Amino acid sequence: ALAKLGVAESVDEIADMLVDPVPDVRTAAIKVMGELDLSIDRNLGRILLTDAAEVVRIEAVRYFAGRREPSVLPEVMRLLPSGTRALQTEIVGYLRAVAAKDFDALREMLGDGELGTEAMASLVDIAAFCGGTKAARFIAESTRHEDSQLRATAFGALEAVDGRRFAGLVKKGLADPVEDVRIAVLTSLARRPHAASYERAVELAEDPDENVRLMLALSLGAAGMTQHAPQLIRLVDDGSTRVVAAAMTSLAALDDRSLQDDIYLRVDLREIRKAITEIQRDRRCEALIASMRERAAGASELEVGILLANDQADFKENLISILRGDRDPTRRLRAMEILHVVAAEEAFVVILSILKRDPSQEVRQRAMEFLAATKQREEVVQALASMLADPSLA
Image (cartoon, rainbow, N blue to C red; front, side, top):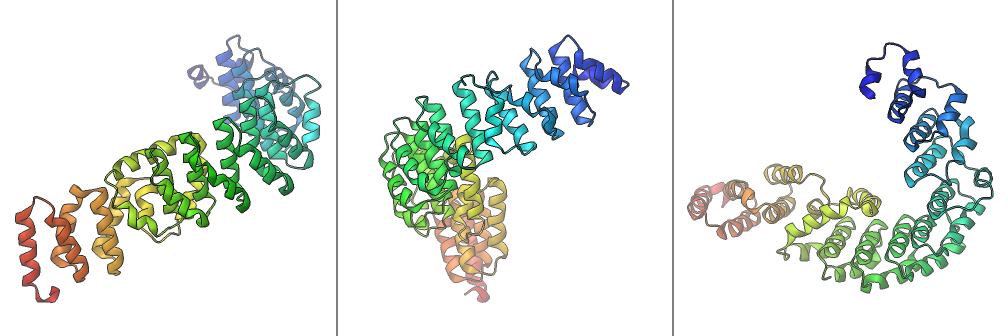
């Protein structure tokens, strides 16, 4: 269909395709009209919003969102009850685009029919976006729903609830029997840190579910809960590698000094890095990881880079640059130690050069210890001889 549109020689030809009998052609035509910023007849637009094919309805909602067109708001809202989650997500995006924030008015557009749980979940998302007393009340009411996924959605929107209700709802959610609900509460708590609620949340360090313990660790780091660093240190001894990885990531983001004493003792550091990579692919963790990246941006410790660096190759190059050019011997020493841990084989040549020429006796001594543990004895002996022969390095 897109190829067909690509050879269309006029706007009229593209517009004609909006009524093509093939749904994929209608969908592609709407997309091209949006990309070219071409207007669709309003009546035709309303027809497309009620098209029998959902792919067409989805693209029509996207089109009107892109143009920030509020005139079709009632028609778009009426799609919510019967749409799939994919369509409902586009509807929420449309409401954000047109800044429709009157929650009562939006609910009235839905009529009096009963909503399914997916539509209710989308309405919770809308309530969180709209804000206000009635929206907050709707979110609070939804935390009591029998459907666990709807409860999870509602607890995930708790930041829209006023402070008087917030703590009570957090307490309730942390005790929910369903894993996803407890995780949603921890995510909300990270976005709206509440010290008293975290006192209760840390009890989930003993939760039988690995994912809950993992999210607790990430939540503490994302919220900047430095007072709970001891709990994170205990989680470093968790039986799950993923939980250990999350706890170490949070300690790194909090720039906790205890991490220095632990990270080099772990022979499974590469496994920890692998686990962190997996965690970062989990959509539930995305916002918390992003928050920790921002928090870690100002941290001085290089250990942060081991765990949170987006590109490990670039991180290693940065370590090598510090080793070769940083004026601070303490930073050079730390960079060498980290490089030795994350890339022992690759680090050999670099550390060998440090042994030959670094002006700091402490740095050279540490380099010699690292190299002495390798099998490259001839090169090490030559470097040591070179160092001893240079009076400026004595």
